[in-house]
Image 1: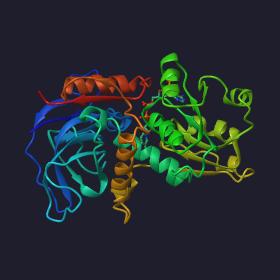
Image 2: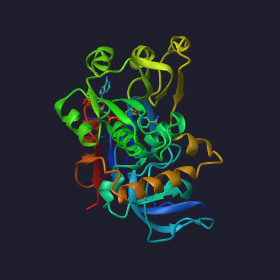
Image 3: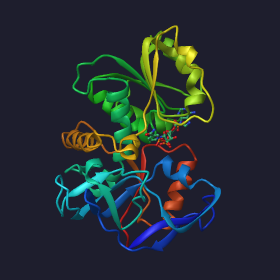
Length: 338
Ligand SMILES: NC(=O)c1ccc[n+]([C@@H]2O[C@H](COP(=O)([O-])OP(=O)(O)OC[C@H]3O[C@@H](n4cnc5c(N)ncnc54)[C@H](OP(=O)(O)O)[C@@H]3O)[C@@H](O)[C@H]2O)c1
């Protein structure tokens, strides 16, 4: 089968940073789906895993943690899917990625693809939808069914891949959304997705929030650097407020800054369930099924913004380079192998 992989961890402008390779087709384990991959999306995690380092891989390492495709075979213990089903999923960071014609994914972390979307539009969604859903509804404790309507969430990085899903899910749950975006294009996109108030993350937030009538915000979803945003979040979070972060730290942050407000901070890592095989791992299938249902009901839209053509090393290098700019809006996808 065709795949895109790497042997060496090189800067993205190096022609061997991602290579077209030929690999044997994998055999499914008992709970695996064998999926013929039709479209993939790229995420910052691909860039982080690929980042330059001295290690060398003997066999090509395949990246990619967002896919949509068709189930062509299932393991002996699979009950949720059959050959022919269309699925979309992020997969597990502990297994080879989805930039391959044929890919294995555990049935507990794959969802039925939205019926109203094609493969490219569907591939844009799973990783960011899982992150946004778990962060908003499980860590920040917002009720998805509208019982929290009227509460306010601040989404830092409101037009990025994750932010695009947080804004939409928060609006679908009835929240008032304050989103940060710094450029005309990203502001327009966040507004299109439903953000009620736009603020600029390149300027101090407190005066902008106060100008919009807010002394503090009770819920903060930070999709960007935890360290860089820590002091601002501690400043603008309301007493008893909650913050969720999704970006790893490289040094300590001062938790003490949250104490006088009894504010809380939670991590969200969408790979936690698959890395640790948690007993509730199949919750990710349920989340993806609910997201698909919300898409089909017109409550959510795809976040695909760019289609860079077929899945090959040259196009994936271009996609990584775009992500490394830090200025992408929505998601970048690739589709097909010919
Ligand atoms: N923990 C998890 O499970 C998880 C899951 C997914 C992603 N992540 C991590 O979350 C981060 C974001 O992922 P993503 O896919 O959303 O990234 P992305 O799409 O590349 O984010 C791009 C957006 O970030 C905004 N931005 C750039 N600098 C900013 C700043 N200083 N403050 C606020 N916003 C800024 C940009 O807005 P403007 O263009 O308007 O400046 C742009 O729209 C990455 O580090 C990724 O690895 C973690």
